[in-house]
Length: 434
Image 1 (cartoon, rainbow, N blue to C red):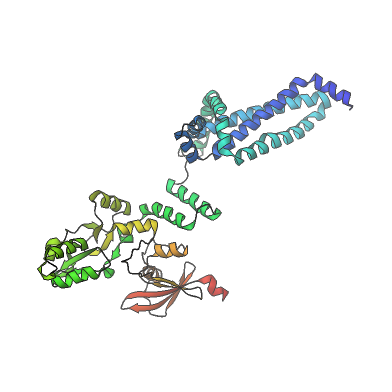
Image 2: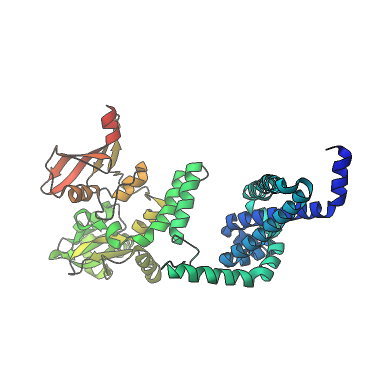
């Protein structure tokens, strides 16, 4: 076919050719719009809408009814694709005769894949937020026009699926918001956008709702308490020597907590007594103790601390027996990590050895170990490392006894009565490598 013949064909069918080109462009618009609007960051759009960005406002309205949006775009996309293919088939039939169907199929497949699918979608996914705000006004008009038909199609689809006992969820989110945020933070950490400390803090906030007071409290075996039957001088000296600002005081039995002594109150009473400790009635300056159940959720306890303007509470079980104490600082440390000051006693409870193993105290919380070493030992059934070993082994191990579970080798280094006080932990991968 000569150039003159090609020119004559174009002149004879120019309107059809222009229509096909325009329809392919419209198809590309629908494909790119669908990709951009489904990939646009909802958080980013919300921020832009709050700052007065009109395009972001339209995007948010469209995303709120995602099913209607996608249905309208698919209807529009299929309509222009079918029409363009039909016009192309008619065009090539008039040129090549019966073989025009095959030619039209090959040509339209290439054109639609390249210019109506891959190119616009690649462009949209590269800059989804900007692309979405640009196309949103036009797409909004399309949704208004085609929306009723889209709703009808969606209704029909649900009825057909209902015949096969398949129900479509109306909730666009497949996972809880907390898990979605956690997944995003973990992904950004792996990509290097979020450092480990920031990831741990954000994770601590998200984990609060899963914790109870018993998970963060100081157990009764580790409590530093005062005996009300001791002399005032002994009690004052214990308060001044202690790294803690507040200490429980008991009488008769350690389960009988009669108050909480604040170091500032002791210093004030000591000054009023002319620095003579025996003149102080310790019981009178003690604050009334506050008891909370060990099953209280950590967020509820945090809110209770803030509401009562308190910093410490005694934790009891369902029988009213003392289990430990929890402080506002204990809860905050679940978010920000250990908080230390110049009076804290430096007891880490964790020491990394040169051979790659880790020596830990039995009372070390599993959550602290996971956070320090970026491990993922389960903490659902036990709070401490010793508790995890006992839970998994179903026995109280003897010294030098070892167990392997969760990809780690646990060796009991020291045991006092029935308490595991020190363990060595080593990843099993390193054991195999040796």
